[in-house]
Amino acid sequence: MFELSRQVGAAGKPYRDTFADTLIDLMREDERVVMFEADLGGASLSTKIREAHPERYVQVGIAEANMMGMAAGLSSEGLVPFVHSFGPFATRRAFDQIFMAGGYAHNTIHIWGSDPGFTAGANGGTHTTYEDVALMRTIPGAVVADAADAVQMAWTLKAFAARGGINYLRTGRKESFQLYAEGSTFELGRGNVVRPGEDVLVVSAGQLLKDALAAADALDDAGVSCEVIDMFCIKPLDVDLLVAEAAGKRAVVTFENHGVIGGLGEAVASALLEAGVTPPFRRHGVVERFGSVGTPGYLQEEYGLTAADLVGTVRALLG
Image 1 (spheres, rainbow, N blue to C red):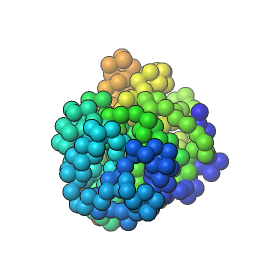
Image 2: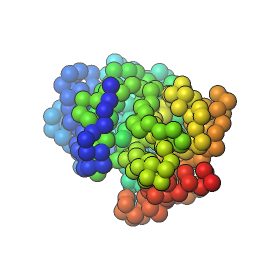
Image 3: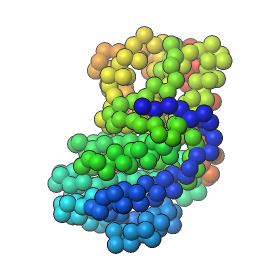
């Protein structure tokens, strides 16, 4: 069960601290857990893991495809590998190795792709991924998750450790915001209604959930009752929840820090269309653009991913 934090939107524990602390705990509990890093130990703070468990930490260097192959090899010997790199390098650059050495060979690789979308910030377009969800959704049996805050991230990492296969988690790396109360639990393949509403359904995930809730508040002030679903597990998708909550709504909007092609929006659209639930619908995400350089805040505005932008989309859809 989950409940929202009493300070939704306030500063939270940085994602990278959550990753390191959670992996250290998992390694303490299970000697099979190992960690692979792609020359980003300082960026991800996985150096803390190396200090705590040096015998189970492998610094691969800037060789992400090789890292996935190494992880798959240790999985085949019964170990439980976690790997990290920035989102584009953890998915786009190493996709064939994940697909073949991991998924096709029935090995386990738990992947943290950090700094997705506008959170890449000053690292720029080469380090920006607006297509990682689209890629990872195509792997048979893979789980794809976008954690909203540190509480959900820690829970998801622990859930990954308890299962096999290809499991992909995307989050920012540094700044996070409080959304869920400590002790909240979730379920892979299940979405959460974090705000009830009658007129419009907004389906979001990851760091944008905070902005979706802010947009819902603004819409409510304007007389539009807005429901918000946290679809943190994009694959498998909670189709039953979507169909139940979209029925009778005046409009449905998806809101994601990802391209509109192949991401949360297309997953939701396909599910609703196949179920015969067809209210007016919009995918609110990045349209036909590469990444660029700037602060995360600037880029969020530049790519039209603020709460105000979402309010504009909903108002336009409602006419």
